[in-house]
Image: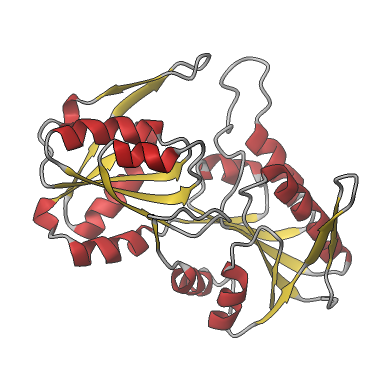
Length: 299
């Protein structure tokens, strides 16, 4: 097996190859004057299993095209491809919320799986059940590295002072898993969103008994509005607020918004090409290497 990296890979591919003791090949790339993308694999890989690594943020649309081009090449040379996507774009449009909308995730996953994938591996994807449905016969594995967060948090805080917060019902499973590893309780905040205006309403009464340190856990932090609202409520009651997010996109001043709301610490995973000063990024390569072996994706 060889490891290959596309331009969106945030540096995980080369390190993963070192951990797995595999050869790493980097795609060459450029942008033509008219904006079209060009890829080339400087060392032809033929008739092998290939672990292809890509993140789809930032510049999601370019990252999608790069994946399509790379999969066409690798499949044409009779390679069996395992695609590791550290951040999967378009995952939040996993259903038709309003009549007339495309199901963007379905379009993306079906396009990728049609180009000869052996397996698709994601890191804490937003809609793993939908992906599993859309990917068809292609093997699908979603890795949720909450143990990476728990290892750090358990060394810094006593379990008696911790409460894990799920910012909405969709994050409950993630919060329950992290709370179990930390040996503490968790609370789910009920949230509703107006699908037309995008306005969000929270019911924060469930947080009235939280004290000590609250760990707000979520898969994606984009604008940070949801977490900031919860953090403001908690910090005003003297609770120390910590954020643990797999994918820190931090769009439009999100980091500053979180700090102003009272967030004391932010932990994230280096799954995208974006890094923000003040955020602590945790190493996930050892975890990924171990899980790829446990899932028998890498022998």
